[in-house]
Length: 299
Image (cartoon, rainbow, N blue to C red; front, side, top):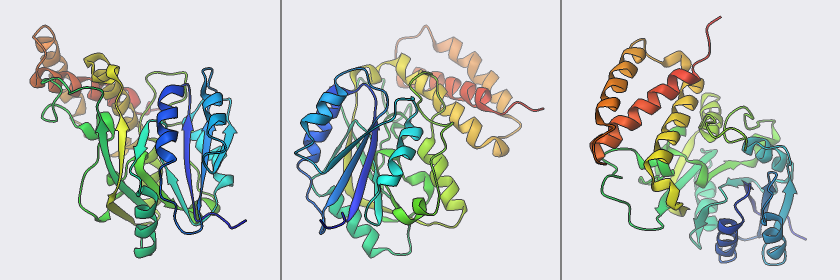
């Protein structure tokens, strides 16, 4: 049997329904020369996830692993010894790739040997049209829904998002791993976001360069509850916690004053009808609160 050209990896936990939709989309992927491998890590699911994976065992080049202890990055680290080929592609269990996704990333890696880190386009797959108050004028869809659109070309770590990310396998062979203290762990709904960002930032700091391939496209499935203000504000807090942990050294001294100002403004708009302005103020308030909560305690 030939060694696969590349490996696709993602972790999943209690998302059997979207997982079935995702794997169905994967069956329509055009394979690169030499083939490919798919590694899915079940991260302690208690729903029908295992049954869904079994249903696709003969329809995809699938290897299913089990990581009972919750933690997305822990699950991804478990998958790394299974990598085959010279390119590792990472995505999520709620992402629908275009049919030529693998070919586009493969071509980008072959055409740009100077780069080791690769990203691609991420578009939201809405369950229904978003309400007027949920606007990109109010909040960044890049943070809320991992939306990412830009032209192809050299890029920094911040341009590469987890649902559509590729890294040369040699980096992991050399010992690099995901940081297991960051990202969802299945137990804390207010976990610190930014697990892929933390890894990519670390790799860029060590000299690895990035390339963004706009033609490598995926769609990120948006759940109905992710269009509700409560979910959005919770995500803003989690994002802030991750920023506070990852960028503590660069946080400005005036952060507390900004937090207090937004706290006052947020209370003032809380009773107003939903609007982009109200969401923008409340979002920034929760983000700043998360940043403060995520900062290391001085000793």
